[in-house]
Length: 518
Image (spheres, rainbow, N blue to C red):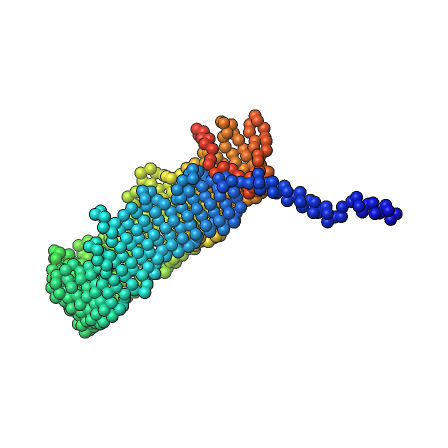
């Protein structure tokens, strides 16, 4: 018995030995796969949410990392980069004719680049603009916190300012030039030929030059005038004010106004008269020439105006009801801002909108030239849908956590975090994407490609005029091709698959279409 047991021990491996042998065989098999069955950098690799390299509908190639946080796209055939993003922080998009546009911390910042100009701004932190003029001269300006402004003028000078300590600013807002020292202690402004000196702004000022002299000792007395344009005076502002505006215009267009605040005020322009008391709560306006009238009382809760077909009509008992009609727009609010119905009649289109905040937002726009309809619908927080029949474009996604009106920068930079499913179709290009990119479908007139990460992928196209289907499973370790009249045969492994070539196989047929979205 002992001998027999010894013979069995010598001839039969222990279980641990069997495990090591099986592991060695698997390791050798995997080594062969890596050596002879790896997907090349020029083929599709779908490892979402970590890494995806795909051929998208239309032939462009795309790399996506971290479930969609990082995206890069190149023109068809491995051409130039046309888009990249680090969402939600930044995105860059190439436009036509040397133009490009970027979002920076959307919606706070943007960057626009053209062949002659670039403007970068991040509100309220900084703004930089540079422009190349036809003569080749370059000007630029930088406005940034904490109150620093640098500006290069066309004649080559560089002016600087550090608010509020001191400096010079040229072509700043509506001013031609601003000089200041320890603002508000002293400032000098120049605009349209007039120079104004400010001391302890806004209390003391004196102006000279174009328009004649003007001065201010605020709030005791103000004499702000421009000869031939306006004459405005106040005493113990805002208690006593008088204005004469539009002096250079015909008499019927000139305005004269006065007020003893807040008790009573009056304004007249031609035959029109306006009265106000307890400003700004109660006011009345009447123009016998046009029939226009308006009543505020108490503003802004109650407003009524009408009588003149050339001017807007308003009815407001806020927040219960409001009505506006003018400039091609008719809008009604019920329990503002809960429910809104509006109709727009513009030169190029008509548009009807219904808005039930925050649950529903939908509109229908009809082109007057073509009669084609564009629709938008959002049922918050479930789904959103956009259908543009003029561009033959459909977008659909769910859920939709943004409760506001359509904001494309939100859909581009933030929606990928929560959208479980998106569909997009534009002409013959059709796309599907699940959350984190685990499922992808990219279809055009050349090919239909679908992939569920790691488990299954399929490619349908024409090969030598014959419908062909290629299937990949288990990260490209098992792949085969099926073709009518020729049956099926295995393809080399392409780990990590699916391993389809990034360049699509041309296979266009007349009347061939991708999936339709209605």
